[in-house]
Amino acid sequence: MVLPVVAIVGRPNVGKSTIFNRIVGSRVSIVEDEPGITRDRIYSSGEWLTRKFNVIDTGGIEIGDEPFMRQIKYQAEIAMDEADVIVFVTNARDGITQADQEVANMLYKTKKPVVLIVNKVDDINFKEQIYEFYSLGLGDPIATSAIHGIGFGDMLDQIVLNMPEKKGMDYEEDVIKFSLIGRPNVGKSSLTNALLGEERVIVSDIAGTTRDAIDTEFTKDGQKYVVIDTAGMRKRGKVYETTEKYSVLRALSAIERSDVCLIVIDASKGLIEQDKRVAGYAHEAGKAVVIVVNKWDAIEKDDKTMRDWEELIRTEMSFLDYAPIVFLSALTKKRLHTLFEPLNLAAENHKKRVVTHVLNDVIMDAVAMNPTPTHNGQRLRIYYATQVSIQPPTFVIFVNDPELLHFSYKRYLENRLRQAFGFEGTPIHIIARTRD
Image 1 (cartoon, rainbow, N blue to C red):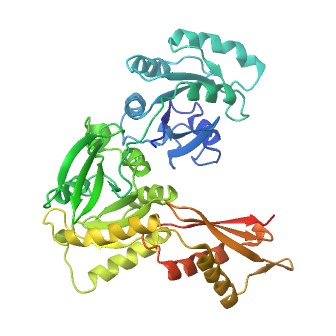
Image 2 (image 1 turned 135 degrees about the horizontal axis):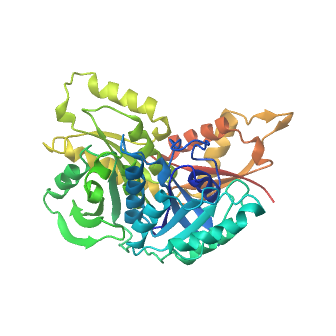
Image 3 (image 1 turned 180 degrees about the vertical axis):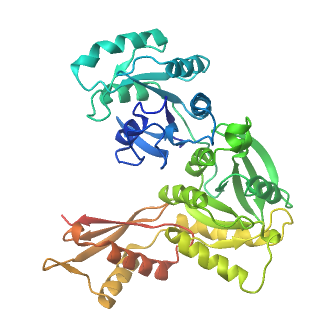
């Protein structure tokens, strides 16, 4: 299932990031009372009236040293390309500005629904000022105060009302769906082409459910695959070439539709922050992961190079300590054959189920080897464990008090489960519940 995308656009300092944080329920973007201060994460998910959706804060998209108005146009352009619903944020205190009118003129041309927000209506003195915003021609303006949460129910009602119904594509259960994600120019398209250039490959090309994405089915050694290609990343020139964070937006829908995400890293450029950012989205989505170090032919190597790279990745991406690492060259196709075994294993482990009595034997053995911790004189007691879901494997442990299950002990239990059952390539979730 591909979630609808909501993009928040508008000129700087109108409250986009504060609105974004309230929708997603946490202080994700940096918020300061200075124009253009947003520098942090620009994507998260929200939910209203049982409808889940993804949210983009375009204030976090920086376009180099472009002039002020051109940056705003680029952000609105990205929103029009990527979003199903656009939230256009204005400011009651400033009234309609030239920048507001410029963005409105762009939004007229899109067929996407627009929800017009007049923010910073913090008291009754600004209530009357929302009426001038009807002149923008974008429907009824909704008065909000992002700081106080006023008007958010009305705003979210309109967002949900304008959302399209989206359906994922259906494939047979044994098909492994994987995507190649990463920052621009790491060789994702070359790797896709190299994989599809093998013998016994393309069966059919099917237009995907995401914009500019193609689902390509192929078979290798009797296993059916679908590679989700996000080749539309380089479209429309400068805005895509200069916006590193834009690669995250392109990766999101592909991540949602994948069983396994291949995190592609450019060996010739080294590991950078953007690689970790993109990898973090796959991890948080609970997807199986294989780390692919591409362009292995483009660097000087000795007998320690591969080990040094592995140590670097394990240090910098410690949250992906379960993910296998593959070194290859898409250009020369050297070591390309080494990719499929960890890919298949990660997909298999992502769907793995553990028999309940065997699971409990492992948990109780773990407790016997390393007794549960105490806090304020109270000891954690583990009564029973069961697996409640797959993709990723999720376990509920029934205890006397969930607050007593410290992160470090949960990590210990996770390591014991990995030792007993493998789970290479997939995250696993452990949830503590009080026994009734």
